[in-house]
Image (cartoon, rainbow, N blue to C red; front, top):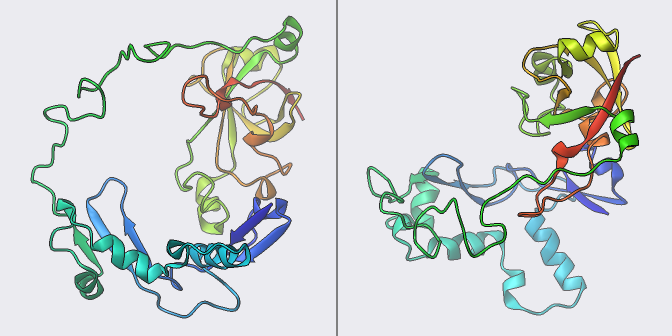
Length: 275
């Protein structure tokens, strides 16, 4: 397992080899934006520190060591950016490498107002947004619950939801920043009052949520936001920075969904006891 990183993350701790990666201050990059219509040119402010390499440079060096000779494998970051901006796509009309070097950013050349699907234009056979697709089986998404044995249901009667509910983290990014961790507070396990009463648990109790995969030590919060039989904890906290050195990942299963091969991480079941 090889990791390219800026610092020692929890993921990097599992790696056999860790290589230093450059930050945005040290390499060329071309970026678009989620939810925006801008393209941005990232120019390096300083040379790479120490032996740090950009991800692309790492793979150029790896390609050389492995004996690959295809020219495109050795294009520099700058060459990749320049080639990309030579596109004749209408959205990039008037936007060049030279212009971005001067301004740093540019608004894409798109129609105003921009309503690309006002007449359909979806990548489907009909050109429409299809909720029902006869070409796949099943034509409509359906829920097929994971089958648990009676013993499993008795041992782990609560369905666990692990959701993106943190306000200051982006998935697990920034979850190591002290001021953001302080603002976010400790992770909480939400539980319905009836389930808490059944287990003699009170709001604010330190509890252990566990199953055959692992366990998480966490503080309990009695909440009407979850239904009876369901508990909920947030994603994103680093195991090394929370009580018990364990997060929701210790409880979820490595199942894949039957449509799209996504992570079926909401199919875990747990029991909760007071610590």
